[in-house]
Amino acid sequence: MKKILVLILLFLTSKAQAITNVTYGGFSYGSILPENSLTRFVHDRSNGQSVIDKALLQTVKKINNQSFQLSYGLLKDGLSEKDQNVLVLALDDELIDYITIEGDDLTRTDIILSFQIIFFNAKNNSLNASIPIEVSKVLNSSKPLSKDQLVNELKNMYENEVMQYFLQLINNFELKNKYNNRIGVTEVLFEEKAETYINKNSKNNDIFKKTKFAKNLSSFLSFNNNIAIVPYSRDRTTSTIMLKFQNSTRTIKLPNPDYHIHLTIRGFKNVLFKEGNIDEQWIYGSYVKIKIFQPELDEVYFEEKFKNGLNVEFSKRSTKNKESFEWIFFIDSLKMLFDNFSKQTIQIDKKWLKNANGNKKIKKSFDKISKIYEKCK
View 1 (cartoon, rainbow, N blue to C red):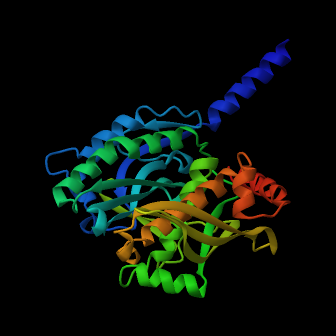
View 2 (tube, rainbow, N blue to C red):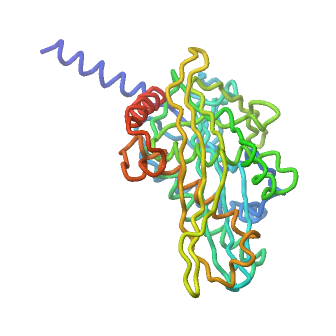
């Protein structure tokens, strides 16, 4: 009986020791500079706490995660390395774009916010875990929105959708002091036709266009599979992320993933699907190849091509100028592809896979990916 009690006590002690101490670090800017964003108006601290500060602190207090315990305030002197973990929500990118469909007197505004939930060690400024989040919102109006309207929409997004995604992701994530294996997108490749089309539709000198595709895929993989993803760093000058913490700038070093993901954007294509007297239906197709491998072992675990079609209906009067606004529908199609791909490791969707890939033996390949994800948790 005594032996059993001792074993139980040892088990409970080990469980208690497994809980990681984490200091709340608040909101920070990551890759994006504050002056290049409208978020700076939502994160205005001139009168004390910003809207983001208040919403994030309220949300953090709702966290129910057994793998770590949060503390608030400044890091104390003399703490051991394992007790200097810090949690930060970092804004990596803010994209606000709009298209006008003149024939329908319709303006579509897309707000896309890309974040990283960062756990880093303040002792050596090394990344412990990073969970990407992409939060987007589509707004329809008769004319382009004003700056004040956009700032108000951003405020609503931060108080609602951003905090909801943040809480859901962090509650489902198991934090460890050390991860034996890591995974991340390390290369984004453009086939010739895709690159021509992407360059035509990207803003001038957009050196981060590959990062955007990597973030799109990473955010869906992380959200649907509860895994940390090493941030894509190929477009950065160094493998680091700059964060503000306790009134100082920290350069957080990124680890090299054990499992590499190479994403190839193969191309985009649209076809007229159905034509009526008033409306037309177009299919917007996106085509990719995804490869997952371990370069150190020279072993490829997954390499498959996928396609996805998005059905969009327009009035005939608006299609005369559709080349000026249809890029956004190719992006919608691509994101739908990434979302569906990332869900196949949870539950196989035979219908989607039949249309997207056609390989009858692909289920075994997704079983391999599932095992890789488990090694990275």
